[in-house]
Image (cartoon, rainbow, N blue to C red):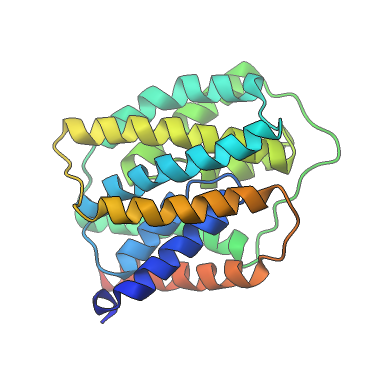
Length: 247
């Protein structure tokens, strides 16, 4: 059984943090898929993914901000709306089976991007976004993020690139801080309804900090990550099957 292979769990955890941080993400969707694959309960998965998200997205933001890719005018409307809605979403406790199905469907999106089926590139010319559209987008993404236990980067980043609001490096900088604040809001919301943190959290956090730091560092340079992306996509596919079809 997978639960009897702790070394594999930590190796995959390290790889997920590395890969996600390299594109400005915290990795919650990957952590959730991995923990689901190893049969952790939703009561452990949601808070654990958000806590690891905080550390990795924070490291990622540090590197991209220092490289001067952050655009405050895009981030603020998104965050103003998302923080309270992520907090509210974090307080909502879904039925376990419904949670697994919704989570499995959401994880299909990173599978499509990591496998190369859905290609998201940046536009040549940037497009201005209205405050209202950014505010509305942030609110919706924040609420969904709080319910599921993610930071929202896997939804926000493709949205920014699709509409041409920023280039890929700027998107990574904006998404990483967006993930950080939403994850914190979601954690607070979950704690208010009695969510408990697993005692193994310290070790998990240590592993993702290492992976996240290295991944964020390499995120600003060109390197071949295709093999790692395909491996992660395969892991996500197995997790989705387990969530939706085996419960």
